[in-house]
Image (cartoon, rainbow, N blue to C red):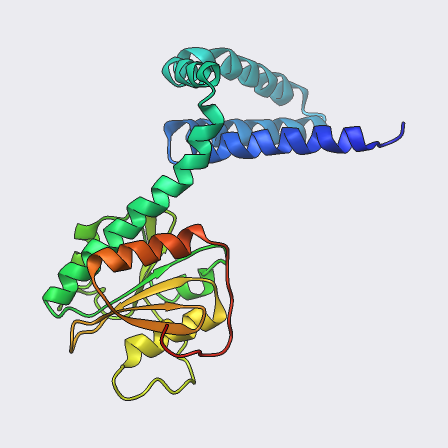
Length: 259
C-alpha cells in the first residue's frame, strides 16, 4: 500500500481538527473528561498487550459507556457547536478567541501596572509567548491562578511574601511568582535598576514580553526582544502588549536601546 499526497492531506486535516477541538475545550469541564478517557484508553492498550482479559473487557466496556454518555453530559455544548457550524461561525469563533484573550490579558496587565505606578509599587510581569519559561518558573513559587488585576496588585504589594522577583503569565494564568530572571550585561544607564536589567535579560533570551514598574519613579517600561521601551501609560501599554502578543516571536540577542 503506497502512501500518497492524498493520505498526507487526510492526516493533516484530521490532526488539525483534533488540535482545534482540544484548543477549544481548554479550561472547560470537557478537558477533564478527555484526560480521563485518555487514561482509560492507555490502560486498555496495556492490558491487551499483557493479555489481561478481564481488565481489558472492563476497560473496553467502560470506554463504550463513557462515549454513549457524552452526548447526554455535554448536550448544551454540542448543541451550541452544531448551531455555530450551521451559521458558519464555528471556525470564526476559534480564530477570534485567541485575539480576544490577548486583548483581555493586555488590558488586565496594563490596568494593574497603571495602578501600581500611581502608588509607586515595584512590579515585574513576564508574559510568555511561544518559547517556554519553565526553567525560570521553577525558581519561584508555583501558583497556577487565573490572572486578574487584583491578584497582580496583591502579589506585588509591599510586605507580601511574593513581592520580590517576577510573575510569569502563561495564557490567562499566573503560573509562578517570585521568580528569578537573568540579568542583562548591556549598559542600560544609571536611571534603571535591577528589575529593568532582569526584564531586558529575559527578553534577550526568549520571546517573552516583560512589563516593569519602577518602585522609585513609578515609570512603566516594556522589554521586548532585548529592547527597553519606557514611559508608558495604561492605554499605550495595553495597545503595545496586544500588538506584541498577537505578533510572531521576534528574538534579538543584542540590546538595541529605547524604542
